[in-house]
Length: 193
Image (cartoon, rainbow, N blue to C red; front, side):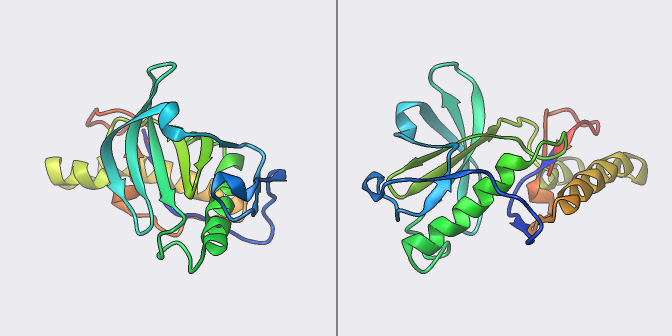
């Protein structure tokens, strides 16, 4: 299957998770962040591997959890990146909003946030490790999809987007690069938005 990844935004109707204050001594702005965010050294728990993708203000890398050996995808965001915000507090506000949204989403067609780590001026959004590559790469390798092959994929995407919209969440960056497959099979399986 395929899952959607990428940017999201929420309307006023969406609820948010509980928050707690994180001391600015951990390298942040002192902004309140969800309780689920752990403040710890990311590299003490994960080994960073190859680049999976790059966004306007983030990069996604495959990482391996040292304790379990489990492969995951990690969206890494640096609060000092000017694309994220004009100052640390604005940048952290953007990241925390995304974390709150992702933490509440549980759908077969939406990539699952496993945990969030903050260390110094960086956030690490740890998600399930989808190994099938993205739709853009599949089209480049195999050519365009026939209507019969594309229909089940589009149904999965429509179901995922409908789930998001029912929760007042807008994806904002729906494109073939952000449709990631669960496994490497050519057949349309489960994909994530």
